[in-house]
Length: 230
Image: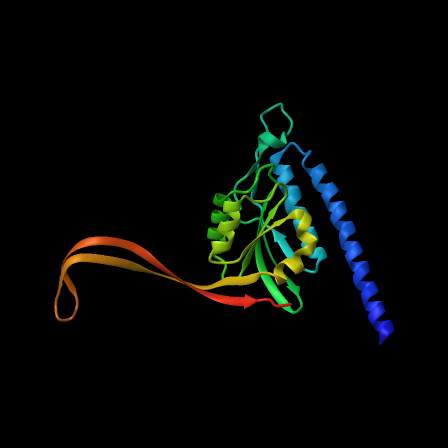
């Protein structure tokens, strides 16, 4: 029994050492990636590196791209910055799933390889994209300085779980997700929310006269809560 426990501890230590080594190698890759001058190529690197790490961890990930190649002007060779354009990926850079300890996480990805911190506007836009995917979580991968406090708060307040992760921490994805309370949207209903003043109603409670006070849209979110306790 003692030998088995020692073997288990040895395996855990080797696993931690291997993860540390991979993280150190990744940090070097990030530094080299920031030397890339083209923002498009820099962003592509982050997307592909994220995909590779997720698949290395046992997940499935598909990168979403919508590109356009334009014929270069007559007499000129192809120029990447001039003749290549991203048409739009509808707010997501990837989609996939990964399983840890028999819990399957469906996710969509957003990747930003910026020198500045992510702001709340990027998180809010990602939250809007995520709302189209019921029972999915959002993984917002950064390759730079992370996110500012407003962005972090926006992620916490989103109707579905958004986890902001620096690419250098991605090998710790299992630990991060197991500490996160998963909040996935299972249903969204909308109804007109009206308030009136000086109104008169008939016996069937139909409003026959009123000064309209306020009209808005009332949104009701239903969530599937999944708390990981380890």
